Amino acid sequence: MKITKGKYVDGFVLSVPKKNTAQYKKMAREAKEVWMKFGALDYKECKIEDSKPKCVTFLFPKMAKTKPSEATWFSFIVYKSKSHRNAVNKKVMAYFEKKYGKDHMQMPFDMKRFTYAGFKVEVGI
Image 1 (cartoon, rainbow, N blue to C red):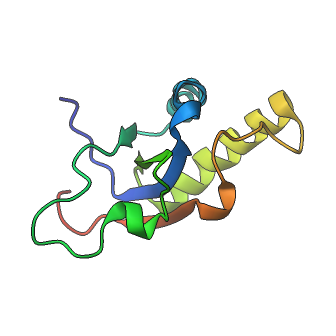
Image 2 (cartoon, rainbow, N blue to C red; image 1 turned 90 degrees about the vertical axis):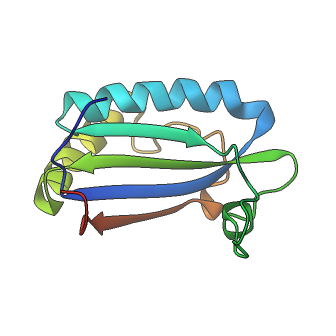
């Protein structure tokens, strides 16, 4: 297992139609290559497996408003710091804009139900 010293993480939760899983994974593999090329320390795309753990009342699928025809995904990218994240993302966005144009690529999921935030690592450094 690769150990990173990242102090900042971008986290994502989204619902992907099951019929679009292959398309999403293809897009995610390209995204991982690009983020890592421009300096991200780690990049993971995780598809839900245990959607109803015991002793939890507010579940990821409920939070993501995942429909029966969809799967919930949790993704994260690790950086050295928030400023490192900003520098990497600037390069990534420029790369994708050049490759796909200002409208970017067609997403295989509903962007209106996609959630994202930046997190400062507090434990585990």
